[in-house]
Image (cartoon, rainbow, N blue to C red):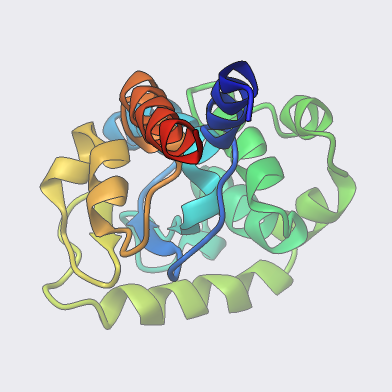
Length: 208
């Protein structure tokens, strides 16, 4: 076999990835008006999912620092994010919306357009009684966490939290938690390529 062809095959294998284990469950409790939550979503959660979404299962809860967020107008941002998660079933589109909406912008219509989703169902949900049901479900989930959720963002990886390291390096925590062989972009791609080329060369010389 031509070694150049082996090199091309090895290089292309860096781009291929097959899910070999259960996705890493990333559970986040946050508040859209919390600065550190905004920072986590835009600098950790969003870019990490863009890179490693194939091995991630993300759940974002925005119950916030209140007992009854659906009863007060100042908690409209919580309600919008809660409803967005229901009406935007595709995680990548949902995170496109949230990463636009949370960093102090809070332009629901504009962020919906940017994410390529419909704004009206989200707005209607956030302004109506439907959101109350979603809020109560998130409240029950937050209250059931052990240890208790006492700060935001509160992050659990595969059911274990809070994970303080994930707030500043979610990518590394996801890679460590994944039980299968991680995708090439979860490690040093050059190392993966060199190893693939070395193995390909060994197989090529054996054939001769």
